[in-house]
Length: 208
Image 1 (tube, rainbow, N blue to C red):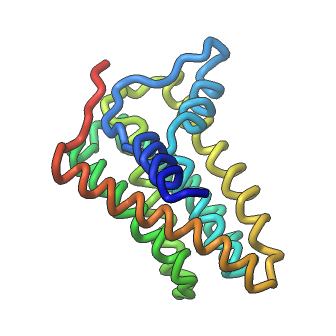
Image 2 (cartoon, rainbow, N blue to C red):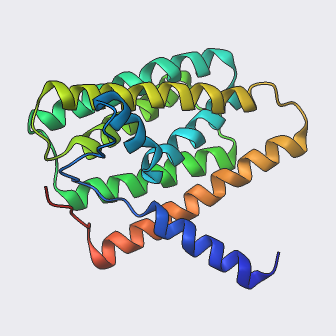
């Protein structure tokens, strides 16, 4: 692959990952709030990219860490969404900046193949879940349909995390582990670019 093609692909990936924090409405599929939440997660790279990277990281750390993070992440996502519907949401720029920082931390940890204490990994999962739960439901009023959408998001987080972690749990060959770590470096690079974007242009807010 030529250098120009790699540059174009990197630019497209960055454009897709620019966080739209404080989005005041959710995707409407017409199939009910749970499917709306699932679709919202699937169409939000700022949600699923760090989840996949964290799952890769957990899989490399072993079954015990994977099980812990699989429990913590969706619960934190639920808690963050509920907090947002209660009006506990930071400014949009703060959410966007924090998302960029999580990209850097999770991607960098995966790229470096760090082996922190299990409680540290759990704290990172809790921070990611709470942050993205707040960002997804910021500006949304508390209601049963929105709670259903939040449940769909949390279920998607659980499934995507479990499937992604299952890909790295059995890895033993060095070149396979290196390939997974490279994906972390790309996420960290995206986080650095996102941080620069937020610093230069601020957060993009979508009205209701």
